[in-house]
Every structure is written in C-alpha cells, then in structure tokens.
Length: 218
Image 1 (cartoon, rainbow, N blue to C red):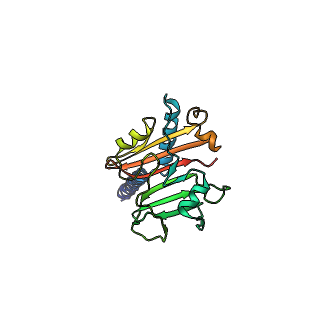
Image 2 (tube, one colour):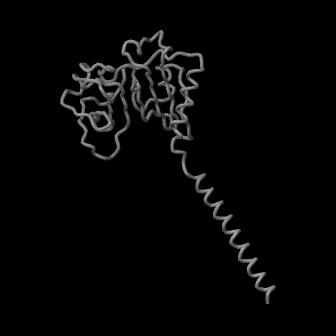
C-alpha cells in the first residue's frame, strides 16, 4: 500500500512539473509575439547614425508647400488664413479641395501664429474630422513632391543621400537629414536658426503614401 501511495505522489509531482514547464514555454512564446513598442524609434536612430557616417550631403531640401514657406507666417496667412486654431499637439489640419488629402502643419511651442516648422501630408481617412478645406487639389512641395509619386521619382528630385528606416514586403520608408555642422552648402539651418532639418517619405507598392519634412523642435 505504501509503495502505491509513493508511486501516486511521484506521478502527481511529475505532472505538475511538466505543466509548469509548458506554461513557461507558452508565456515565453507570448512574449515573442508582442511587437517591439519602440521599433520605429530604434530603426530611425540607426538610420540617423548611418547618415552621419556616410560621405554625402543632402543638398536639395524642400522648404515650402502650396505657397507656404517654412517658418514664414506671412506666407501661411495668405494660404490658410489667420482665423485657425491649433490643437493640443500644436498642429493645424486641413483638407484638400476634394477632401482626399490631409495637410497637417506643426507650429513649435513658443513660435508665433502660423509660423510653420513641419509639413505633413497623407491621404485622408474615411472619417470626417471637420477640417477646413483649402482651395488646393493636391498638396505639392516646391520641388514637385506629391502623393502618388514613385520612390525613383522622389529620389530623382531630392538626391541619393538618404537612409532606409524601415522596409517590408509592400512598404519602405526613406529618410533625409541635415544636421549641424553639415550645413555648409544649403545654409538652411543657419537661415532659420534651427538645429536639424529632416524629411521622411513612405512608399507602399512603390507609391508615395505619406511624407513629412521640416525642422525638429530645438
């Protein structure tokens, strides 16, 4: 009888140990499936470091969009008017003429009204956010960058001094940057008293779906 009880106890202990190991493996598997929350920030940091090491200068930065010049409030007044209010993120939002595109303008904290430091253009989603509509069919930069262009067309306009931030089967993001002291030719940072200019372009199925450019907040 004692031997039978001992055998039963050993069986129970072994079963519990196996279950514990199984649960641990399952838990680890779940951790592996959780996406890295700061993956894009990490990849962006790697892209910035790469641009610092390669021997090239970004010489063709865009400085305006739809008649609005970076950090020139008077040019923005003429295009978007003076009766707009920024949201909690210091941003203005506008639709294109047919509501198909959304333009987001960032005004850095401490700057004057309509002193725009960052342009952001994307296709509009299906929701109606009530944004003001501008009399512009397609948001386009001074160098002709607009949604729908191919990666090759954008690179032809801006040059090859970029780094890839992220790439998947269907989408790729490329990134340009000017940072002191590498501003001896464009002088864009010196003229605007800003530390960093950047531009990022996301293509899906080789069509530009999103782009953003301007000055980082000092």
